[in-house]
Image (cartoon, rainbow, N blue to C red; front, top):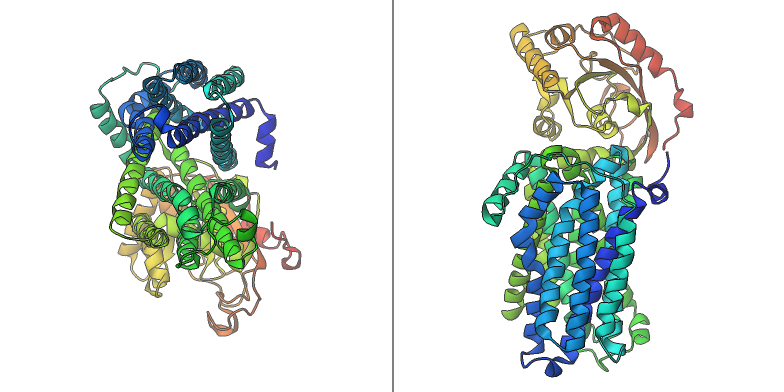
Amino acid sequence: MSSQYSLLNTRRFLPFFVTQFLGAFNDNLFKNGLVVLLTFQAAGWTTIKAELLANLAAGIFILPFFLFSATAGQLADKYDKAMLARLVKLLEMAIMAVAALGFWLHSLVLLLTALFLLGCHSTLFGPVKYAILPQHLRENELIGGNGLIEAGTFVAILLGTLAGGLLAGTTVNPIWIGVGGMAVAGVGYLSSRLIPTAPPPDPELRINLNPITETWHNIAFARENRTVFLAILGISWFWLYGALFLAQFPAYARNVLGGGESTVTLLLAVFTLGIGLGSLLCERMSDKRVEIGLVPLGSIGLTLFGLDLALASPSGVIAGAPLPLASMLAQFSTWRLLIDLILIGMFGGFFIVPLYALVQVRSAAAHRARIIAANNILNALFMVGGALAAASLLGAGLSIPWLFAVAAVCNAAVALYIYLLIPEFLLRFLSWGLAHGSYRLNVQDAERIPAEGPAVLVCNHVSLVDVLVIQAASPRPVRFLLDQRFFRVPILGRLLRHSGAIAAPLDGSDPGQLARAQAEAAAVLGGGDLLAVFPEVTHTPDGRLQPFRPLLQPILACTPAPVIPMALQGLWGSFFSRIEGRTLGRPFRRGIRSPIALNIGEPLAAKDATPERLHAEVGRLQTAIPNSSIQPN
């Protein structure tokens, strides 16, 4: 299994990566060059105040996201995305020519026009950027590909911002900002010509140019899948949260830390490094699949380290300000702040990368680009709303550290709201934490669990956490048919109900209720989903495989599906097993992060999945790897 970095050696990824990297670099090269120029040389260009000009520039750049995102989504669903990427690069070259002319003629109108057009360029490229990845990457490459894209984007933002400020502050004639932008756009166009074709999913689509009605249509497409829509809201919240922090860096560096321009650059660099690290770590932490269990982990880190940043910030007047960067780095308190920033960025990567991959995987292919366009519209709306809220709070006298604290608390509230609406996020987090924290899970032949279509997973029952271990091993959500006694266990029962597990009297005490539960299980298979059953009914009292009850035959008679035997190893004797006659008896009896394994067998046809055959297959899998040789990934 190659790492995500091997994608950089492939034509299906590298040219696109370079194209989007240079586009993000160019956006920030021009934006920051213009803002620095207008901040320090405003008198030579206009009578408008520099502060107003900076906010005007930000508004002009983001306006096209509201006006044209809906149209951009339609174009990306109707036409080849590789062709659109090349056309966008040609547009970028023309925009930079307008910018160079504006610098040469000393025309603020031309420069603001170029800024607006650059916003249009970013708006058009947005749906292409995220909708093309599922066409060129396999599903087990999406997390790694999205991680590289997010890391590359933030590094490009940092480098473009630094380059723009440098050109604006050191060149005699600012026309070089435009000329440099033209050169970067030219290289981006050359790389775009190497992007493989990405055929449109809906070439017969009729373009609706009305941005209002089409925006509602795009949002309606996104709302068709509740999980996708809430993921989009989560992405939009992250951009609000991140933009709020980034916007305060200049004033925070000067007024709170007592630093100068170099301090602002340091804060931006550390924050960007954190997001890049978090984005790149996602593939390793998720075992190359779309692991939304990382999203709650990300939200926890965003809250905790956002609060610590607020608490660690100086509260008094800094003597000797502005302090040289070396003097600031000599203080322990500065390092605590930098660690907080890098961790905010890193946990932000854990939060955002799986959400983007989730939207890509679970969106209908025919509408994917328009759903991405809806995401971009909501991102822009959230960022504008966040900027207005921050301005209001700061205007009311709130300090910047307290603004960070308010944002961190709001992040916890938003995350909790999303996880209560869609328990899958929290359940995947618990499953991921159990498999990678309490235990070290090794999954044998994981590819035998089908990526799509119905199937029944049949496993031995060893402990109270078998459900979570199987969830952690599966690339897809799993519905469980479980004995109703488990639903009476505190906390566990609530989690099972939220996960969609089906309660049934599997001991046969109520045949009518059991039949209804089996009919519901058959409907799960009829909907193309995964169903898991423990034919032993309850977890083993002695570590041995118990007799299998004939629970599956009525289900498979209604909805035939492949049956996949599997066996858990290493859980017997742990805290969650029934060793010594009781469960939850001795914490840490097996230590922390003890190795466990899930061995997955060959699928059986529905007609062959008798209790006797399944018992034999699970027993064989149980002894296929001796417990002493279980080695975690």
